[in-house]
Image (cartoon, rainbow, N blue to C red):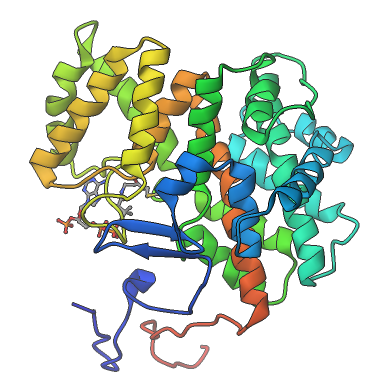
Length: 383
Ligand code: ACO
């Protein structure tokens, strides 16, 4: 039931739950049929048949690219790869105690401040800024993980696709094709999800006619929180905690007792539940299939068992299903990413969705400025 202000009788839509604030042609989330469409295409089909670059093009232009369009797009993305000097110098100033999401947020801001078209807000300028950001962010994430490990920057390669190059810059060697494929699927599934908190943040900032990088910088801040993108990192902490508590025994056996204790302590279990999907996140089966392949590739059945045990314990206890962050946490762990780097990987992908929404917002802009009911002290005179 919608809460009502006692004083005024006004309906209050806390968390904007159920409130429709605008229309969008970028994606459609249908919780009833458990489906997610990017520009009309089911995301499962895109993940099975397309590269992340094709999906980025689709989100920005509304149609999948022709062979020629894709070649031009890939060239622009490859030309924009690498760490800009100003970005590297700024990252080097940040201690390795800085959360990698703060590094990403700072890098996005520096990329905006130094962009030649910084103050231009035309669609053409915003498409250029979007592809530049898309191309630049993997180098930020890869370098940040490497510097934390005391390793040197690995320069980008322009003979590899987006996902293969991302993994190459992070680990300094080419990843196996099946690992590249699983990473590509995760990038596609993370790319877009309608009016989620970070996208809405980007649209709010854009609605003031601020520039694209300001909107993306704000969106990264919104994504950092554990109730949104930060959950993929939190899932891995849960797995680590259950493993520690098992004290050498099979962690899958301890998952239920860990969960019961956590729920009794009224804790939210990260990687479960969703504001929109109440019968399961449409992206999870596709991501879980890739996770299963990676569990086999890296020969880590223990992780697969723990995943299944916690999922079924949560199903029994609360009937709450996993969201996309549940399979991506262990997926990125198996690939060798440090846990704190998981949400920056989400950033690298979601740049596509955020910027598609920024451009859409500008096409039919209206300042986003909701109202509130005042419940503070009554009017009084300063003594
Ligand atoms: N663990 C335990 N209980 C939960 C969880 C959870 N993960 N999710 C929902 N619930 C319970 C709530 O406690 C509440 O119970 P109550 O009615 O007895 O109080 C009920 O389910 C409804 O939950 P809300 O939090 O009100 O649902 P809402 O739609 O606001 O929240 C949210 C959705 C924030 C995602 C929530 O499920 C959550 O906190 N999940 C954990 C964080 C997470 O995984 N976030 C990732 C989101 S997806 C993404 O960014 C890719």
